[in-house]
Image 1 (tube, one colour):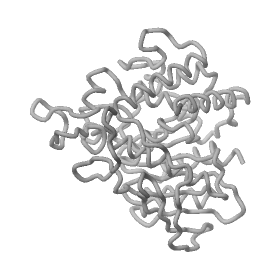
Image 2: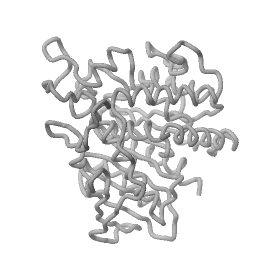
Image 3: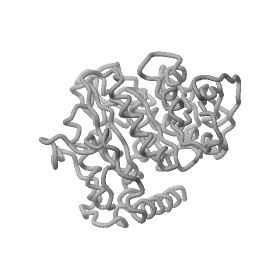
Image 4: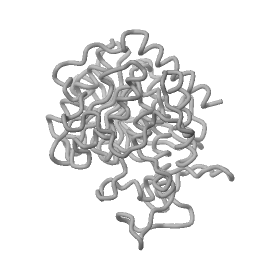
Length: 379
């Protein structure tokens, strides 16, 4: 039933986007060039399997075909990384403290995010004014950083709130701890695939979406998500697996599997390598420290993260690339460009690039311009 409802939601989304001239205005010049692959990567699809082919080899040719193929991809991935518990329709939001800051009100909150009343602490930043406002969920190790109370250049929520976009900044909840044994804190149903930590994090984000969508000052149709590094992985899985997020920014998470890069560590048990009866050591997979969990199965079956990217179509996303996501990642992104072409959409996939992993003021300004265009400009 849940897949049927999601399929209907997706069909309505496509009809809205295609039926209204693409659903977005002209991309502003300051970021327009980032929606095109660097010259040498134009039309280069690398060695990735096309998401526009069904498992039986049939080619996707229409939006209707893609709806079916999309459900096939979702079912495949959920069968590997675990399906979620039922979403919480109206998560409890407890307001703990209020403070006025630079043109917005900061609320320290506790948000219900998982079964049995499990919650996560966070900061809700609401611009001054009547609203309803566009909003962005900011995910990272801790809630303070995204709210501008921690490390600089990762203060996405604070900067967006100053620009008139509401933000909810959260950190990692106990529900999907980064500490051993990495098992999400929900009852495992015998006969079902165990929930991988990254899937659990995406589930947390989905419930945070519900919490934000229920706020009177937030426009439920204009909620995005952003994260850097670990948070970028979290934001990518959340936005790809929940089409209610209107758009997304993933800052240098490593958008494909790459066992030559130690920081693109999806193999670790706190991401996709969780296995109930086996605990691998940290580090790049090797003969003495092999792959485990869902990651092992995904790699062995030839799957890669570009399949998840494709689930974003026709919703826009930006890869804020650094050391882990250089221009060659267009080989993977071109597959989602191709999906959007089938749907009649352009300028939905973008990537900026910087030298290092750490965000820069320039790369962040492009993130804010992206959200202002795809969320705020629809007011």
